[in-house]
Image 1 (cartoon, rainbow, N blue to C red):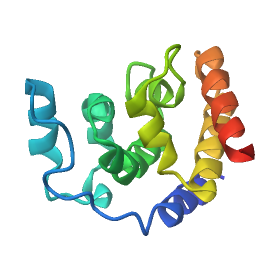
Image 2 (image 1 turned 45 degrees about the horizontal axis):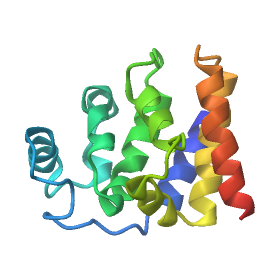
Image 3 (image 1 turned 180 degrees about the vertical axis):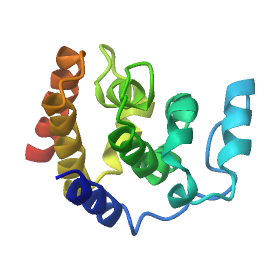
Image 4 (image 1 turned 90 degrees about the vertical axis):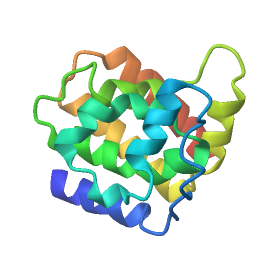
Length: 153
């Protein structure tokens, strides 16, 4: 199941193009500049799953095209990280897929970029998290509800 999920994620995101060196993160703050420097010129395939947990904060700073491009590294990193502790990439992924209480243009811009196949894979990933019984089931369910709504739309 895990191997299939990982290969399906790789396939679903295989054609997503690199966003360009100047379209990774806003560089108007220290964190955005740091994220930009770390990911500039890199393929998501080159990011080792052990590094994903330490870099998970980057998901919060990515511009929409960089978010969809680098997301597979974080999804796969979370799957491969047998500890899968919250506070790591798994928790940050859930934050990124849980709709905010107020309308958020950045959230909407990211979500518009996903195709149905990618949304289905994100849904499968969330079901996987639910199955391995990570403590945050309500967070997982909230993100899953949103993704399933997007798939039906």
